[in-house]
Length: 168
Image 1: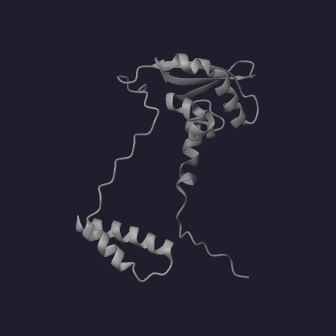
Image 2: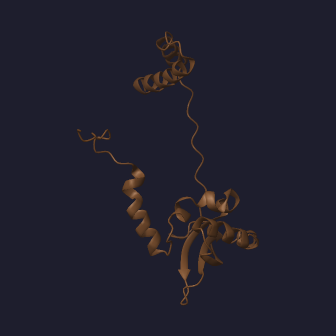
Image 3: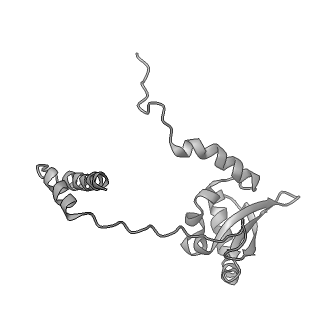
């Protein structure tokens, strides 16, 4: 029986390439489970993720129960203080056991410090300009003979993208 041939032709997934660097960076800050860093919005919830981000997990001398340090702006700290227990429960659920016994809140100014610039949300995507009507007409005409509705719509979008790039 012949060995199975690879279909990836030497390409690797980005997650596979970056996994080791993310793990090392996370462990240097005390994160044994890097999922807390990479999936923060899912673990903490959208409300908390919008106002805070994890900075460090510190382990005490006894080794029982760690302290999660969370960064937020000064104005959001009182709101986050009221949600500390819920945040601790969610992070412990991600770990699968009661790893975090305490949540500590660190505050920073929204701008002005190199490390402490508190921008917790991704910027909104820029709106795309409307394609030229001539480009839309050409793309529709090119995909006109396709019977499958979904395939035709996908080919029209592809055609609009390609033709608009060529004409710019």
